[in-house]
Image (cartoon, rainbow, N blue to C red):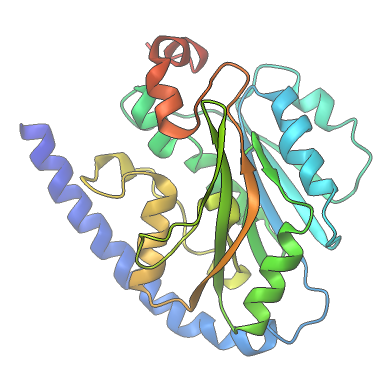
Length: 273
């Protein structure tokens, strides 16, 4: 009970800190928007956190990024303490647009499958945000698949509609059933983090390592999108799927439900006690 009350107070203070700091930074940074939307062939920075999923990383995320119709991008792969052959295999790829980083794995939250889902990639994401050079930012997880026109259609939509942040629908496969998630019941409509494209000057919106403490929007990406909304970022939604979300080879579902359904497997996989 005491811990719950502490987390509630901590989250309240933390949210206020984010709100005021980001509001001030956004006030000064948003003046860059006019230059951004008229820039020809802007550089897209793609952040991809990964941990011990080399085969999926190469077969899904990297392959779909390299197959993009839009070619001016940098792909930042951040290995969060991987102990498999990720480093060796990524470095074999002869493409100067791929940049590989290795960081020390730090667990700054109580070790559970749920908390790993909430904030597991936070350290890697924030490291990537420090290293990007792009005009726009995209996110892809190592097991995600982008449509070949993912960057092209999102960028075109953002520029035509003068938006700082866009997201889209996604195709999801759960228990062998494919459906389009178009977020029709959400207000505002915001697609999964794999569908995001947003202005590079918003990189000061860091992922929150304490998002697990919250009683709402506990996942790192929903925490950030809440802060985007609070800052009144110019946001839009493209009702067109640009991402395919498939179960991992060990699962038949996606997202947190996949973690929970095979809790013991993931406790061991992520070296939780």
